[in-house]
Amino acid sequence: MDRPVKKQKKKKLCMDAALTYLGTRMRSEYEMRSYLQKKEYREDEIEQTIERLKGYGYIDDLAFAKELIRCKTAIRPMGKRALQHALYKEGVDKDTIEEGLAAYPDEAEQEACDVLCEKLMRKNGTDRQGLAKTQRALAARGFGYELVSKAMQKRSGIEWE
Image (cartoon, rainbow, N blue to C red; front, side):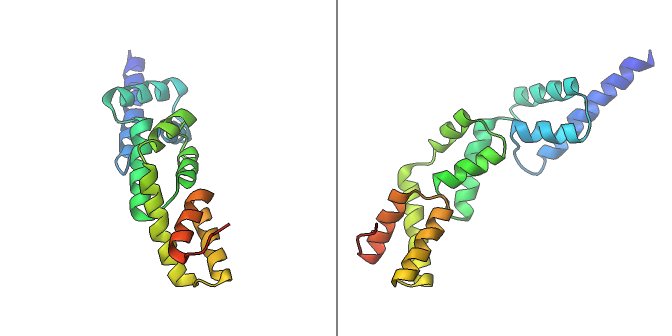
C-alpha cells in the first residue's frame, strides 16, 4: 500500500527537478535527459517526465535552437558555422539545427560579418598583417570564406583572396 505512494512521490520529484532546471532558461531534450540522469532518476521516470514536458511545450528543440541563435547573435556577431557548432554541443539533432538556422537569414549573417569586420579592421589596422588577423578572427567566429572576403573587400577596397 505504501509502495504506490513512494512511486508517485518519486515521479513528482523528477518532474520538480526538471521544472527547476527549466527555471533559468530553455533546455534541449538532450540537456534535460543528461541532467535527470546525473540526478540518478530511473530511465522510465525520465522518459515520462520528458514526454510530459514536451506535451506542455516546455521542451521543444526547434524553439530552443531558434532562441539560442537569437540570443547568441544579439550578444556578439556569429556566423552560421559557429551557431551550428553551439547547437550541436547542446545536443540538438542535425535536422533541427538546419531548420533553426534557416530562420537566420543570409543577409543578417552578412551584415553581422560586415559590422564585425569594420570593428576588427579599426583595431588591427589595414596593413597585410592586420588584414590577415581580421580574416582569422572572422573565420573563428564562424563566418564562411565568401562572407569574409566580401566584407573585407568592402572595407579595404582590396580584392581579398
